[in-house]
Image (cartoon, rainbow, N blue to C red):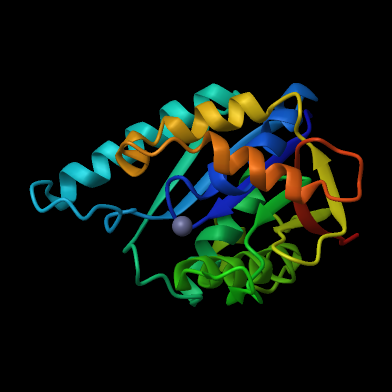
Length: 230
Ligand SMILES: [Zn+2]
């Protein structure tokens, strides 16, 4: 079986801001990657002239185009409401189901302990909810036989994820060199045209990547806290 990974996030464009450069290196290394977008991304516009359904459709199309740029074609869109994501039984079960069926060696998600950063960033509550639910799904529920017997009834046996990767804002233990994939990351971000509007993400992305590589002799990096779980 080929190597597999899964990225679990709240909104369309979360992966591109946080880890698309790393995902592109994984794809290059032979990983099959699945994206799981947990909300409908329906609050991602201030435009009074775009309807909710129209926005949901547009953002899914942008996410598919963005994923394609880094070589990812497996995307699951869960239907939870943007801005109201809860770390509850329903989301945990959905994530367990996906983990048991896709069988990713690596899962990448938000660090749920991050509420804000000294640089002036307040983390979105959906990011915290998805991080919490993903961590719980990875450990212990996806690997625990008695949890969710309905998944066993669906033929989904327990599965152990080997590595948990969390976006890190200030305390990384892993710097991934994305100097060969940063152009793909920028192109993948630009595919979210409804979010970028006239803003060019390139200068900020390049500046972030340099900061991420500080002291590591890496020109461009994404940073993570990685836990080995087995
Ligand atoms: Zn988000």
